Amino acid sequence: MLQRNCDDSSLRVGVISSKKTLRRAVDRNRAKRLMREAYRINRHRFFGKLDVVLIARRPIAKATLALVEKDLMRLASKAGMLSEKDS
Image (cartoon, rainbow, N blue to C red; front, side):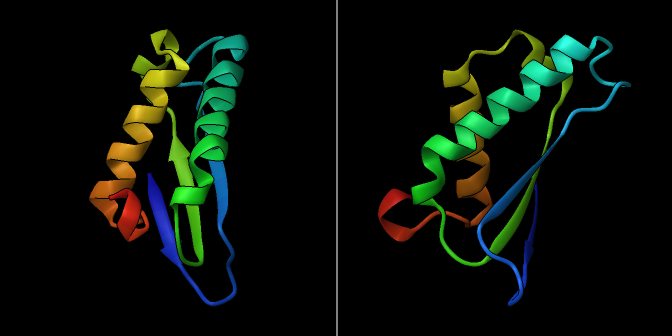
């Protein structure tokens, strides 16, 4: 997960899934869908003007949405991107 704080940004997300990491297009697309959905469900917990880039790694190929959400929230908490009530 990469983040950028800027005045010109709003709360946005970008997802990356490379061919080197996940060979099949169907796996890359599923990984991107899972990451986008995990972010969409938890977007209200994030604060500030952030640009967030989520990068897929190989273990996501066998992951469920619940596991992706858990990892996203763990990383967001570690990065200090969550509102105080959700930390």
